[in-house]
Length: 270
Image 1 (tube, rainbow, N blue to C red):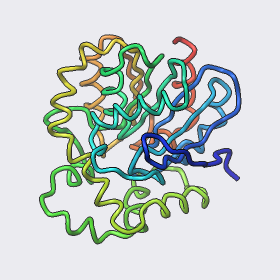
Image 2: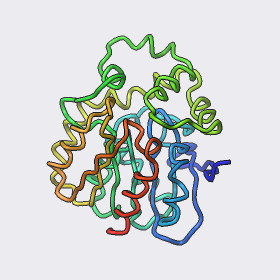
Image 3: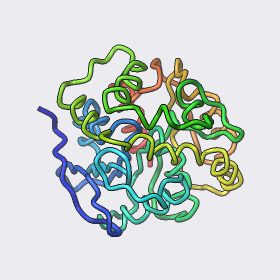
Image 4: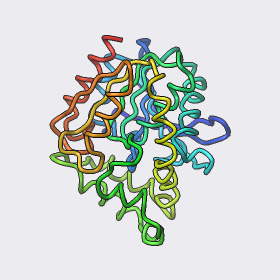
């Protein structure tokens, strides 16, 4: 039984899936990674909830939230992250956005400089020109999308889960991931990362002006998004710190205790 209990609400005309933890502590907005869902935080939820009132969301088009094509880019998703914080009436929340949340959270911080207390990101493409490993490099740059349109839910989830080290997905989590990728869902979502070449170039110009405190976390053995992406951000973000964790790509699941420790200590400092 997971502590995460999903529900839905309408934000900006879209059905958005989310989960909350009880409490009156400072708020933290958690953005689910790809190709997973809010259940990606299953292993860290209880520890994070000791330090903050959690609101986890499946971003539009990901997990079980409704898709809208115009939001499938980091800059537009950053705008939506601000709208989510407003919809939940969050007062300067912390943001935790691994994977695709990395670029979205940074755009959000650039667009709304005083809206967020701090940001925790990592394991997401950040460099322009891109420096990505397999299979993300292919997802971003392949010209022929036909093979991806033919992929079913099991293909998508199994490809991603093959990169998880030392962690066996609980059945409730695996089933949730599978249910999120029916039909053409995966191929439609690819527009987000295929926007990286242009969007990350724009983001690079904004980085020096982002003053929100940023904690960077990446797996030491991440072959999907190499640590170089976080080192790039560390050099350019004026108020940032980098922790490289003994893990591969899915740090939040593979080394959940260490991930939760870094996040909660960061929150305590900010």
